[in-house]
Amino acid sequence: MQRKMTKPVQVGSVTVGGGSSIVIQSMTNTDTRDVSKSLAQIHALAEAGCEIVRLAVLDGDAAKALGEIATKSPLPVIADIHFDYRLALLAVEQGIHGLRLNPGNIGARWKVQEVVRAVKEQQIPIRIGVNAGSLEKELLEKYQGPTAEGMIESALGHIRLLEEEGYDKIKVSLKASTVPLMLDAYRKMNEVVDYPLHLGVTEAGTVSSGVVKSAIGIGTLLAEGIGDTIRVSLTGDPVREIPVALEILRVLNLRQRSVELISCPTCGRTQVDLALLAEKVELRLAQLPPLDKPLKVAVMGCAVNGPGEAREADYGIAGGKGMGLLFRRGEVIARLPEEELLAALLCEIEEYVRDHGRG
Image (cartoon, rainbow, N blue to C red; front, side, top):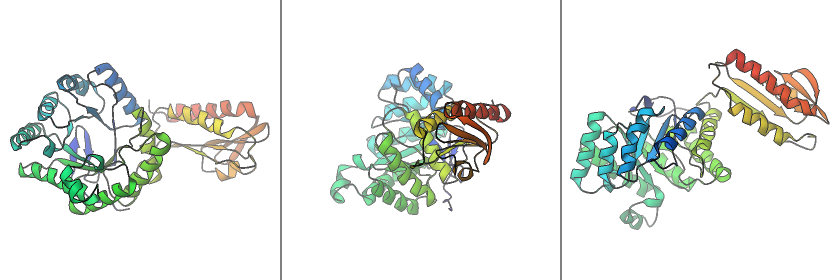
């Protein structure tokens, strides 16, 4: 796939666009005014692999809390502002690294000028975020509902306000909860601007439904070379979004993860509780530190075909009736009772971590 070369935008220490790696983002769901809880969640996101974090700014107290959060955060911090330009100015004063702000929604032109003046001094980028569900009334009437054309017109209107003030450190998102609409909007926007695009399916849903919608929507665009940064939006703990985002990038060869689990879908030959085994292994793998060499682990349900089908795995287990095989790169190294399989595999993984851990 050939990615479009967009304008690079610097968000703290992270470069978005300009051919840099696809950046993973998320948003806290804590009360921003609760600094300790917000920082705890940001650290959890960072440990999971998140690279930029966004926080809601509901009032002046939340904006002021960003000062301590931005100072102590391991990730660049973006302030999410709606309608009130004063909150944007206050957030900038606190040392945040980016704004999510639609300039057309903050009122008079002089208010836009005030915000631009503030971000220019600190070289803080602005993400213009258009959502199909909150499109301007006049555009909904013009296009008889939310359409890609209406979303693009909205985004271009916001962009124009910033460009007329001489500011072009801009990122753009055009999210929708309907995947075909989201795809249509991003594809068409990609043809008319060179700004970095932030991809996402908004209000994607719970893990079960949201993962599918996000994988199809975000993955399709990335496979077409569209997009510079992504967020998988799932209901609940935002930390759960990060493994999904990483997996989307990994399967498209856009990001190499240090750990990969493969497991078979099971069939009539499976005689062990493979789903439980795989879940336990996956949980342990999620807790591993960064590795200097990728690790692939296989959990297979058939001792007859398992080792051969998963020969590319560094380590793996394959179940049988009351017993199973422990194998290394396709070669069987032990035949064990079923109840000993998991412990034996985890022992091999621990040894691998001792040899290849970067901690």
